[in-house]
Image 1 (cartoon, rainbow, N blue to C red):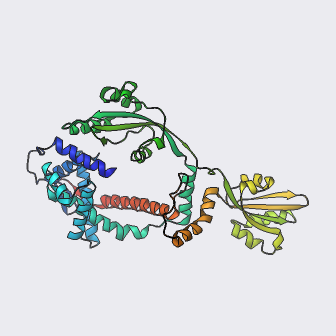
Image 2 (cartoon, rainbow, N blue to C red):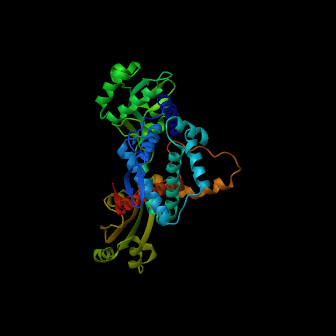
Image 3 (tube, helix red, strand yellow):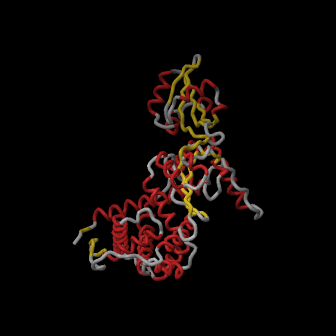
Length: 427
């Protein structure tokens, strides 16, 4: 989707700016800001603004573009401190990767930029800073990031407990974009994205600009099953929260905006079921039970302090809630992990400690994980069956997602640290 939008945005911008930009008056190489020992000039700022405008970036205003250039200087400063220099081969690969997002070759992309007034060097500088920063992150940030099994289980549990979106209530706004007017349509759409703050704002804009029958109703569409939407649109809608407007989407002859009014979802089958890992001790007196409970902070401790008991008096079980006797299940229901309760049982006393409580789906996945891996490795080479809509993500896939997110957050924090420690001044 990003590649399609980038290519369409390039075409629309070039159509609207074939004559090239009109730069501000004055010395183009006038220093605007000093970052440590580097300088950001007026010319660089003008080039970056134009470049971001071509990409239809939401931060193409002068203040944001200047901050982006300052951050690039900080990225290069960090690379220099680590002895990192982006090679010509790495930069060329970065140029090709970026141009490929618009389905263009490097020279074709550079030619398109040139027609809109952006020099090759501005594009190269932008990519070079990114390439150097990527290596900084790889050397300095990545080794410090880990994803433990407990963190993975927590994220998996969050997924299990989060309803999956099944239906959405959308409003639409379709702006006609006949040949030669693509740039104007995109400009109007971007203006609406910046200024629409509520469903009422969107409805008013739809009545004024939308070219569909829903315009008279403020663009409102009925509740729609998510699976009825085009596959390319689903990720866009799923990335939105109720009350948000989408970024402009280009289709043939039009630019489309959506407003997400609300969504409905349901939990995966079995998501509410639990599996409990717990220990049961049968003791002769409440005093003994309370003594062992007071000494035990975990199930492992419990076994240590009850080591002198006969094997028949201590038992650890992992059972689905439905298989636990009702009396025990009721007492376990009020316990947090590693908490105990002591209950009289006729002439004896029973001590229960909850070791772990987890969704049944998570427990089932742990049991199935090893056989699934073996089957994948030892199969006959045929295609793997596609996972069902209720399937949980593979643990390693999820681990990689968490890892990438943590690396991104750590990189942002490091850049903020560089910014805080830098000497940034104006002439």
